[in-house]
Amino acid sequence: MAIHIPRGTQDILPGVVEQWQYVEQKMRELCKRYNYSEIRTPIFEQTELFQRGVGETTDIVQKEMYTFEDRGGRSMTLRPEGTAPTVRSYVEHKMYSNPNQPTKLFYIGPMFRYERPQAGRYRQFVQFGVEALGSNDPAIDAEVIALALDVYRELGLKQLKLVINSLGDIESRKEHREALIAHFKPRIGEFCSDCQNRLEKNPMRILDCKKDRDHELMHTAPPIIDYLNEESRNFFEKVKTYLTEMGIEYEVDPRLVRGLDYYNHTAFEIMSNAEGFGAITTLMGGGRYNGLVEEIGGPPTPGIGFALSIERLLLALGAEGVTLPVENKLDCYIVALGERAKDKAASLLYELRKAGFSADKDYLDRKLKAQFKAADRLNVKYVAVLGEDELEKNVINVKNMETGNQEEVRIDFLIEYLLERK
Image 1 (cartoon, one colour):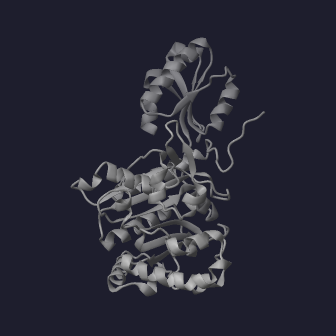
Image 2 (cartoon, one colour; image 1 turned 120 degrees about the vertical axis):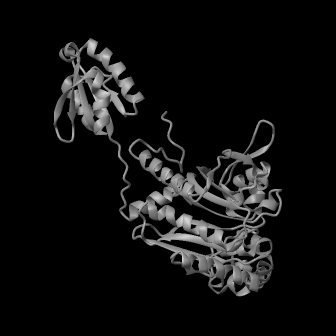
Image 3 (cartoon, one colour; image 1 turned 135 degrees about the vertical axis):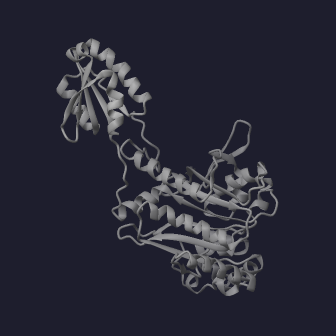
């Protein structure tokens, strides 16, 4: 019986994986420019971390987590997102005591959610995210948003829309919470069971409901922006000012929410306007989460971050017809004819690789013509032909596969010859 890949996962094969490598390298280069350092956390954590760090009323915790009991009877969960593990590490390793503040981190790695697979959405997916911890300055909100936009722009995307909102501080959230309860409570029986459970626990989560998003009360629900106090309004105005100064265009969407209790002030999403991208246009989301560090056991620490799916990024590139400049050319392929030539080719190949060249040779004992065909398939720049006659003269024939020009080169000069042309 054949064994197949699990539903909602994918094999990223040679020819495609190079695109992933290119994207990830661009992200790392960009983070270096913005002075964000990479962090790598475990793929599984204690389940309680996500219950407290993501929120017990969220779909992620209630329906989508891959949770298991280990041999010691402890409840563990494959990480469904990257913020909670990053904050856990920040607290556990007392990064807040580092004199270089704020602490600016990024991560790239697989996440796991049990949800319905569809285009660009998998049960195992790869997230790139950043977290800036330790600053209440609205300028860092603008910086994080700019970094997110730069990821997409530097990879070639143009059909982008930035949407922002303010969720206010704790005081503003409290007033808005009461207004939402008053708005939904008289007709909460018309909503799904999840919304009914969230009414008292976290009514803002109702606004995120996929089942009831077309209900008329969703469109008339009081927006958080109407409940912002003076401090919250001033903070939001500052963020907008910084974005304007950077030349970053945005739209304010009063309906944009991040449904977790500890989210406050800035919330944002980037969407794709490209034709053919799909009904779900959101590429990524982020926001400020003052309160999360305390929830996980650390000192009061403000924070802001975002996360994006690389799968959806690649989907957006395809929708806009963007081709990544990925070069898969091999520098040199050695064609060896005869036993002595094959012996010499093995050591020559090793020397080429040590000198920094990508190189290969035939391992299937193919004829001359078949070896050249193999070199063609590998998109080789140079083919170096070595036979018994060449060995006797201590030379090797080097053919430029782009121009067709061929030169006889001393064997001990091959590396220098290729270096001059690299």
